[in-house]
Structures are given as structure tokens and as C-alpha cells.
Amino acid sequence: MSTQEQSAPARCDVAIVGGGILGLAVARELLRRRPGASLCVLERERDLATHQTGHNSGVVHAGIYYAPGSLKARLCVAGARELREYCIERAIPYEQCGKVIVDTDPSELPRLDELERRGQANAVPGLTRLDAEGIRALEPHAVGIAGLHSPATAIVSFPAVARAYAHDVAGAGGGVVTGCEVLGVRAGARGVRLEHTRGATEAGHAIFCAGAWADRLAVAAGADPDPRIVPFRGAYLRLAPARRELVRSLIYPVPDPALPFLGVHLTKHIDGDVLIGPTALLAGARDAYRLSRVRPRDVFDTLAWPGSWRMFAHWWRTGVSELRHAAIRAAFVRAAARYVPELRLQDVEPSFAGVRAQALARDGKLVDDFVFSATERALHVRNAPSPAATSSLAIARHVVDRAQEAFDL
Ligand SMILES: Cc1cc2nc3c(=O)[nH]c(=O)nc-3n(C[C@H](O)[C@H](O)[C@H](O)COP(=O)(O)OP(=O)(O)OC[C@H]3O[C@@H](n4cnc5c(N)ncnc54)[C@H](O)[C@@H]3O)c2cc1C
Image 1 (tube, rainbow, N blue to C red):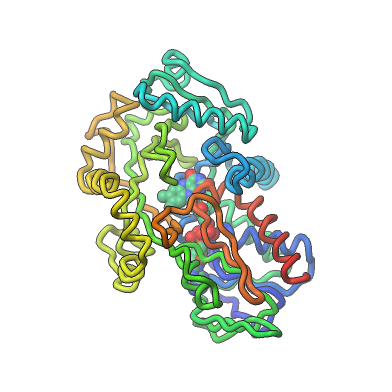
Image 2 (image 1 turned 180 degrees about the vertical axis):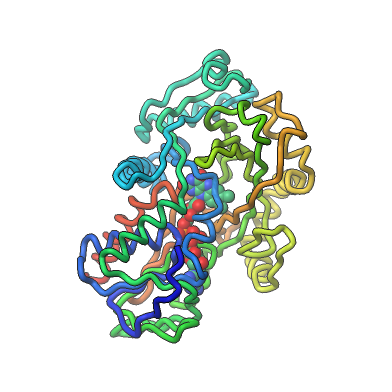
């Protein structure tokens, strides 16, 4: 959706920075609670949903992986339910195809047990344990010794959802301004001044949902630099159309619980493609959709952050293996062939890449949960990796609850 004709208002009650799925969901929720509020969404790109929202696996997660009680667990389970209802109401294609998590090695069984425990504790609907035969019954080309089946997991186009949110915002009188990059933030007792590429907006309050650039805007508004965003590039392959029958729905490995990534998976996409991926390679730019894109400022910000060096020291083996997946297609395919053994190099074609905005703490920990924080007259979404697209409606409620408390709206 392009809304570039609209100019940025000189004044408004609330400005939302970022026209990805979260900024739009937050704007929509605010206008539902405060009809008539003067609100605008400022997005730097010419179109909405062009970064993480437009480059992902398109999976509506059911809430299996997340530590019970965490924001991810709560907001994913609620958000998935609400998103399903929203898509039905708006006639947005939504396919509840279900998902199988496949364990190929006895050493992974304790992790699978833990996933099952978490899924039950999070009240994931219909989660069941599978044996080798149960896996084959659901996914005839997958092989494993044990697994989990989540029938509620679904697929959707998150850009289509984001466009529908934008439509709701515009319909409720909110402004959605694209091609408007916020360059400076100045908060005072009476409001927040946002300087941007279309001039300036004086807002009563601001909510920043800026994805890969969240840390920079938060620091500009006076927040602590911890955590910093580091970009992880996730490249996908796709199955050649003649080989799509290898995958019926979604096939995932058992992930390493110490990492916030789910491992290379095979996922049916709502447009019919079957994707394999994503990789998780530290990138040279926050918009490294091409592997060769390197931005000196982004590289500097990663390397100057003490947490990066602590992360390298701890995760260098995983980094080397991810580098192999990124550089050698055969190694990437072999990773997926562990649980779909018929998969061959000639079955795949290159596809797109996304860039995860992953928060990294000063102590070197990859921040797992969603993180929200506040500065004077502003709120910030500081870490919203997967499953934030799934959780968008629930995250919006959470953020607007905080905004109502903090801003006295
Ligand atoms: C490879 C990959 C796979 C994923 N798979 C899934 C999945 O299957 N299911 C799921 O639920 N989630 C998944 N995710 C996560 C999901 O895509 C994100 O959590 C979600 O899109 C975050 O939305 P957002 O609005 O915060 O970020 P974004 O979509 O990145 O939007 C942020 C916006 O802020 C704008 N912005 C930044 N700086 C400025 C500025 N200075 N001025 C104005 N605008 C600015 C950007 O241009 C951008 O449009 C995946 C992510 C990736 C990368």
C-alpha cells in the first residue's frame, strides 16, 4: 500500500514511528480506544510493510516454544487467536495447515519433552505427541523418531494483514505517511518533536515501532543504549514446483533452546511456494536483503557493542555453521534433509531473504522476550522478533495499555 501523497502533519496527539505490522496494529488499537484522536503513522519507506513484515516465513505460531509466563508466550497465544478471527472477518486468506516438529536424534528428546511441556503450559490448542508413524501419517516424506503436532499453527500473508490494519487506521481518520524518515527526536514537557525528511511533527506523545532501527531512535529519545539491535540475515530457498509434494504443511526441527531462532524449517507459503530456511547469519547491514550489502554505520554499531564480542566468543561454532549454510547451498539443503531425506540439491531454487532485528544485551545475551520501554512522552518497542507478527494484535493491546497508563490518554 502506498500512501506517499499524504503529507506529514505539523501537529498531532500521537505519532507512531514505523509502518510495519506493529506500528500499524498499535495505531489501529489506539484509534479503536480513542476514536477521533489525531494520530499519524510515519514510515520511512515509500511503501508499508517492506522490512521484517514483508520478509518472513508467514507462519502464525501457536505458542509452543516460549517460556511459560513470558510476554512471548502470553501475547503469541492470544495474538494468534485474535489474528485468526481478524482474517476471517476481513476475508484475508488464512490456512490452518498445522505443523509438525520432528526429532531425528535421541539426544534431542529432552528438548522435545521441554517443548511439549511449554506448549501445554501455554495452553497451545490441540498439541499432541507423535511417534515415527504419526509423523509419517501427517508428513509422508518426513522422518523422525518422535515429534509434536500443532494443528492450530497456520499460514498467512503478514503484508496483507498489515495493509488491512492500515486500511482500518485510515478509515478511522488516522494519517499514514510514507517516505517520511524520522531523523531526530526531541522530548520536552509539552510534547515530542520529530524531525523527519518531510519537515517536523510536534506530537503530544510518540510510540516507536521501528524494527531494525528501534535502538537508534530510542537512544535519540534519551533511552539506554542497552540492548542494541544486531541484524541477522535469514535467506530462504524454495522447492521447485514439481517437488512441492515433499511437504504438506510445516515441518520444523527441534530448536536449540539457547537461541531465539527456530532452525531451518520447511514451510508452505500462502502463495503456494514451499520455503526452506531461514539461515541466521550476522549481516553487514540492517537491510541486508542482498548478502553483499554492507553499511559502514551498521557494521560499526555491531562491532562497537561489547555484547557482540561476548556473543562471538560464545556462539562462534554456531556462527561457522550458519556461514556454511549461507555460503554452500548443499550444506543448507543437507540441514533440511535430516528430516526430509528425499530432499536433493536439484529440488531447490533460490528465494528471498529477510533480516531479523534481534536485540543483543551488553552482556552478550540474545534477548529472547519482547521488550518495551519508555522515555519522556514516548514508548519504544525495543525487541519484537518472531512471533511478533503473529502476536501483533495482542502486542498492540499491551502497548496501548501502557500508553494509556503513561500518557494519561
Ligand atoms: C526471516 C524472518 C522470518 C520470520 N518469520 C516469522 C513468522 O513466521 N511468524 C511471525 O510471527 N514472525 C516472524 N518473523 C518476525 C516478524 O516478521 C517481525 O517480528 C515483525 O514483522 C515485526 O514487525 P515490526 O513492525 O516491529 O517491524 P518491521 O516490519 O521491520 O517494521 C518496522 C518499520 O519501521 C520503519 N522505520 C524504521 N526506522 C524508521 C524511521 N527512522 N522513521 C520512520 N520509519 C522507520 C521501517 O522502515 C519499517 O517499515 C520473522 C522475521 C524474519 C526476519
